[in-house]
Image 1 (tube, rainbow, N blue to C red):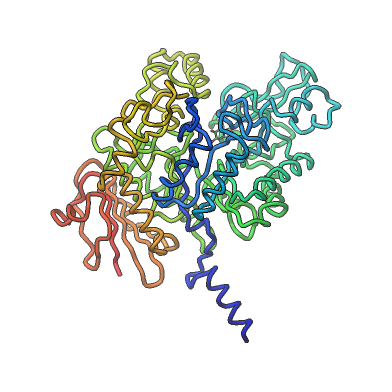
Image 2: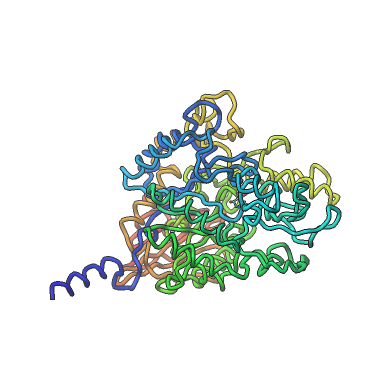
Amino acid sequence: MKNYIWIAITLFCFFDAAGQDKKWWRATVVYQIYPQSFKDADGDGIGDLKGITQKIDYLHQLGVETIWINPFYKSPGLDNGYDIADYLAIDPQYGTMADFDALLAGLKKRKMHLIMDMVLNHTSSEHEWFRQGSSSRQSPFHDFYIWQKGNRDSLPNNWPSIFGGSAWTWNEQTREYYLHMFLDKQPDLNWDNPLVRQSLYKMMRFWLDKGVDGFRLDAISLISKNKSFPPMDLSKGIFAALNGNVNNGPHLHRYLHEMNDQVLRKYNVFTVGEVYTDKDSAWQYVAPARNEISAIHFFDGLWLSGKTTGIPFKNTMDGWNTALSGKQSWNTVILTNHDYPRAVSRIGNDSMYRVESAKMLGAFLLTYRGTPFIFQGEELGMTNYPFNNISEIKDVTAHTGFAALQQQGMSDSAAFVVIAMTTRDNARTPIQWDASPNAGFTTAEKPWLSVNPDFTNINAASQQADTMSVLHFYARLIALRKANPVLIYGDFEDKSPKDPSLYVYTRTLKTKQWQIVLNMTATEVDYTVPTTGKLVLSSYGKKGQNDAPSVLRPYEARIYRLH
Ligand code: NOJ
């Protein structure tokens, strides 16, 4: 009898009455750190691990419980660390393994989690595996990569690299082509070789045994290739062409399942995949019964821009929510990361309503169903950089993109406008800590990438002192979410699918129901306050709401408790 009671109690702890699986990563709020640009502790102009450790209290006070850090492994840095030369070493620009251990210990002390960025689709061409594998066809590492025989003047097929140009590069030493879906210095690994998989799993266990809480799996939908290498139909765009051949390839799900079986299931970890897929097949990655990965980042949301606020925004988010809404299925909520322009500049309104629209987007991020991902600086309403010249941009894809536009016949100035608006460097500028030189990011004369000149106006120190700031609003939202399971596990319902201006939705858990109202526009919109509603939080302040309860000011966000 006693045993049954214990079993019942244990089950209740993991599954509440609504059947929601209470894994820690469903309730957490993730904060993404781009290490180059977070905080420079050693004064060389580049952010580092010690800098992150110095700022743990900032993150803790904000209320985030999990951090995801972009790659800081040893790397030549041609794609800012996504070209790994040694998976088991820290790149000296970020510090040492002792610095890593200190950071992890600092996080654990505050009961926080660490997610590492894990790049399993490719390595750097400077990785020992590729150095040896590319030197001779007889090397045991040759089959770690994907090769095609041929001659220098004719490519094996028309497969494109996602970063532009062909996916094939000639290797003189073996007189073959190797495949790379990104830069030519990022050769793709051959996942069909069991030794490759075992080597990667072993390396993953090294980090998990250290106490890491999971991985963001870079480009994970690309790991399995169609080895008959058929020509691609590129007329419908690159992602349509890659699908089935490179993306969502033939053995992808078998390999993810194997990785789960041999590594992940042995630890209580969170894995979030960077996955290019449509919403109808997304469940194949995350359905718990399939034992693959925990969640994915979906691109339809990240590709949204200002022009699409209102109905397209809601349709995209709701569509994904429905697709991943079964009781045991889960989603992430993400508006931007290090590969996209700043959310407030792209979807919000950084010219007239920066603070208001940043708060509205924050309210969406933290009240929607799914694990929220905040990208560093989003909590300050940081904006895109006012680039004046292509030479100010470091992002390698901005330069290949610029050259491609020129080739298509675009003038330099027109091409520059496109690149300046879309470059990944918009999101990668240093965090604006205060109004001192270089925004308090570094004591070096020059940071690796320029600080946005708006730092005297937008910075953490001034927002800490202002209770109406974007930063304070984020902290309130996170605290509210943490204290109210209805905002985490509650069922979602869109109450305004046809409304072009307002996004009104409810979250319902057992007897509790909350209503979130977002004005997605720069104009005032009439709104009928729910009769049973009690206002819990408004982006304009609770007091302001009483002045005009039935009008939502530009970009206003309100949260009501209905029952
Ligand atoms: C996706 C990462 O987010 C991006 O920054 C990187 O360039 C590519 N994958 C290649 O690893």
